[in-house]
Length: 294
Image (tube, rainbow, N blue to C red):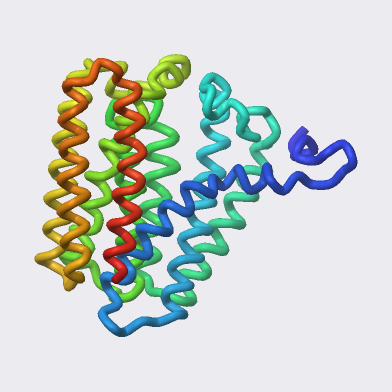
């Protein structure tokens, strides 16, 4: 049956929470935070509510579209992982027809908002990000290569660039640095998840670094990308006009994350350390994005 009857309660009322879960609100919120950071770096006193809201809501709908498709494509492996086995798609509550329709509507709304309120460059970059997430990452690399993390990081690095180009309508060195900051941040963030969720990834046969290489090799890569991330946050001080508070926060957060990364080589409880790394990565990028906006 090619409809979504299971998304209804026994009394026939639509379970809106399951529709909301399909778009992964947490991912949308996280990406919007970094989009705001990129946007306000570009503002420099010329704030525009129309451009800001267009970039924010346009990308929110586009990210939601990609998440719906990701949920449907990954429904088989999500069934094998404890943290995802209760997703509506993993429970067999979403048909192909519904997933495509829902994703198309969300994507069409998102791109329409960007078209009306931003510029062609922003639309192109958003389309590249959606393609990288749905096609390159979800359909191919995630299941077939340890480089899936790298491809996934490309799409996740798009939002701050979207925020910047929506305001400036050009791709320059600042946009490159914003992209590099998010790219280098995502690698240790994802590797930390892969360490403390390695049993889930093993059950789903997803080739993540801790399973395909050694734990030591993974920790070395985490430290390397944390160092590159910190360097990139410093580069933003050179190529863009940022507040002194951003500089102070970047230094403190960077030094803390480096020290936490080094501690991983001394700790035998890999999962406990990885959870700390994951939590700090969220705190770090959120605070950094907030102080970008000052």
